[in-house]
Amino acid sequence: MKLGVLRSAGHNEEAEVTNPVIITWHNDKSRMVGNFRALNTYTTPDWFPIPRVHETLTQFSKAIFITSMHALKGFQQNVLTPHARKLLRIIFHCGIYEYLRMTFGIKNAPSHYQRMMNTIFPHELSEGWLIIYIDDIIICSETWKLHLE
Image (cartoon, rainbow, N blue to C red; front, side, top):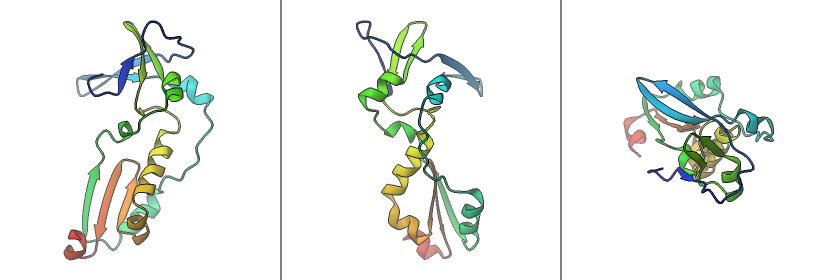
């Protein structure tokens, strides 16, 4: 809630759809995750191509210099529509909350994010020195001078 990703749905709002919450543990830290499996069964797939590993490795073949970056909280940069917020409500022991930004576990989140990134960087992707795999960004070049450009 501090990051503006979730908000309380409020006790006066109708909750037509709620999704259960799962607590996951990783490296002795807990994380609350919405379980959107039921919602995903009713979601029409968004067929946008995610790069294939073999094609990505082929792009690396001539590279001497490689820089890899991860878009931290990349999915959460996408603001949800009011309709999507209502579908992504989660129920927790202390109330009902709704996501304000895209979250993990939604069927079309990876394809939506890949489309967004491809739309932002079309020129760089067509030149072949930039590889985007969802929220991982890789710059590869044959010379240090090109790499710095």
